[in-house]
Structure formats: structure tokens, C-alpha cells
Image (cartoon, rainbow, N blue to C red; front, side):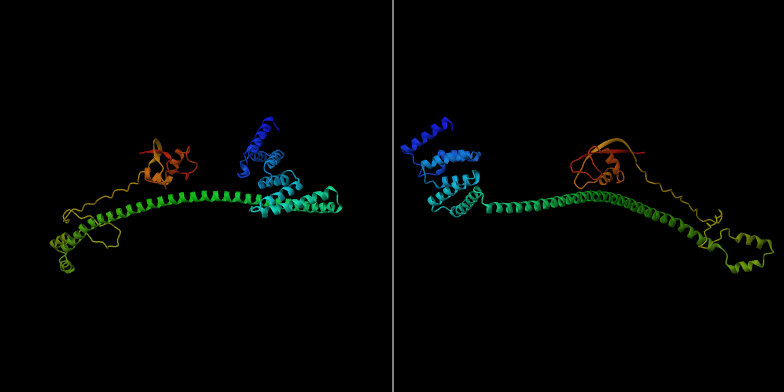
Amino acid sequence: MSINVKILTLALLLLCAVGCDFRGGAESAHPLFKNAEAARENGKYQEATDFFHRYLEVRYDSPQTHLRLATLYDENLDEPLQAVYHYQQFLHYSTNSPEREQVKKWLKAAKRKYYLHARLKYNDPEDVEMLKNSLEKNRAKLTRTITQNRQLLNYIEGIKKQLAASNQEITKLKLTKEKAVVDLELAQEKLDQLQNKNAALVREQNALRNKLQTIEEPLQDLKETTTAELPSAEMLDEESTDAATPESADETNTLTPEFVEEPENSKTPPAKLSDNNTTSDVKVIPLKPVESPKIPDPKREKTQTYQVQRGDTLIKISRRFYGTGKHYKLIFEANRHILASESSLSPGQILNIPVLSEN
């Protein structure tokens, strides 16, 4: 012990002798008790017992000091006989402590420990045999524990492998799902285009029918007018008797129509009417060829930027800027420096949108 500690201890003892009595106050407030607790927390168990014994010289009936010494001798210094003594002193001076029942159990265990130490000290054959049996049991138990631990480790390794395989399968399924979503959006885009083309063809067909109807109405009127001007069959029979005369022949030739109505099922177009017999000119409206829609050339001239919103996909962005979702790969190639895959969009990302050249 250093000189300063000794001087401090003597000064405290002197103060206590003069009039400072710690009996009425808390035990933990005494400097010797505090020093003992600090030494115990730092692992200096022998030094802690010295401080506690010095405090007992000031207050011999301190139950907490006896309890601290008992636990030090029992748990840290392996001196069960000293532990038994201080456990008994604690029970003697603490009649109303809630720790009495627990301390009684510790006292009983300390007595048994002292008894075993005493028997081993004198090499009792029964104790030696008992220790051998206990050692064999402990070894067998340790062997079983090691085997169980190995089995448990092997089981854990198997679970880890299964988990890794499951994670890989989940990753593959996610990629398959993303690809299916992209394919579905493309198919929907193609379906929308086909529906639009079909609607355009239906409108064009209706327009052609209207034009055909406007052409057939004058033709029908012309047919009715021409039919009304033709002679009947009876008139032709009466005039056939006079076929020898030149006049009748001329009239017959004059009455022979140059326009002959053909059956409705015939695919041959009707014969042209002569200038003398036509009552109105028929205008034939030529049909304009259907022009195929222009497909933009995916050749980049310059780029523009777009901030990704929640729920966006490359196909939706392609449809937004190009009117179709088939150029989503062009946007992906232009942003490979920030996109790990075609479906790894995050809200707030700034994408470069290539501008397509128009022919």
C-alpha cells in the first residue's frame, strides 16, 4: 500500500475516533467501502478484502461488508471457510434483510465446497473414486456435446446452401418476371397498333363503300333510262316482217341499242355508251393507294433528359417520347451508366432520351 493511502486511512480513522460515526449513515458512503468496491471492479480482489477488513475495524456489525467479503472468498479467492464465516456474520447482523433466504443457500453451498476441499486434501479413496466417475461422466457428456455441435454445424451448413440456392432461384424468377412484364407491354403495344390499323382500315373501307355508292347511283339511273328507250318485243316482231324494205332495215338498225345490260353476277365491266345514247357523263374516281405509316429511324441526333416518376418503365417512357414502346432498348443503351438492367428504374433518376431523326 502506498504512503498516501496509509495517510488517508489514518486520517479517516482519526476523524471517526473524534466524532465522525458512520453507523447511522449509509455503508457505501464510507471511503474505505468505496475503495474496496473500486478494487473489486478492477479485479484486485485481495486489495478489496483488505479495504473491507479495515472498514470492519470501524464498523464490525456492517452486514453488507460481511456479504461482500463472503462473495469475494466464495467466488474469487476460493476460500470457502472464510466465506462460511462472513455469510454467518451477515445473517447474524441483518435480521430483516430481504437477502437472507438467498444468503442461506449460498452458505449451504459454501459449506459443501469446504467439505469437498477438506476430503480432497486428505486423499480420501472414496473421493478419488467419485472424482474419477465424475470425470468419466463429464468426458462422455463433453463427447456427446461435441458430436451434437458437429451435427448442428453440418445442419446449419446445409440450411445455408439451401438458402443460397433459394436466393438464386428467386433471382432467376425475378428476372423471368421482369422479362415477361416487358414482353407483355410490348405485346400490348403491338396489339394497340394493330387495333389502330384495323380501325383505320375500317374507316377506309367505309369511305370506299360511300364512294362506290355514289358511283352506282348514276349508273343505275342510266340503266333505267336506257331500258325505257329500248323497243318492246312485240314491236320488234311486227317490224321484223318488214325487214326486206330498206326503210324498215334502217329503222331496225337505228333501234338496236349499243348498250346491253349484263347480269349482275357477271364480273365483266359494263360496255361504254355511245355519245348519242348517253344522258349523263359518268365520272370514275380513282382510288388512292394506302400509304404505310412512316417508321422513325432510331438514329440519334441529340438527346434530351427526363426525370423518372413512380410507376415508370422504359416502355412507358418510350411511348411517351416516341409514340411507341419499341424503342425502350434505345433508352436503356443511352443510360447504361446508371441502369443495371432494363427494369432497374428508381424515381428521381435523370435519363438521357435520344431524339430520333425524321426522314
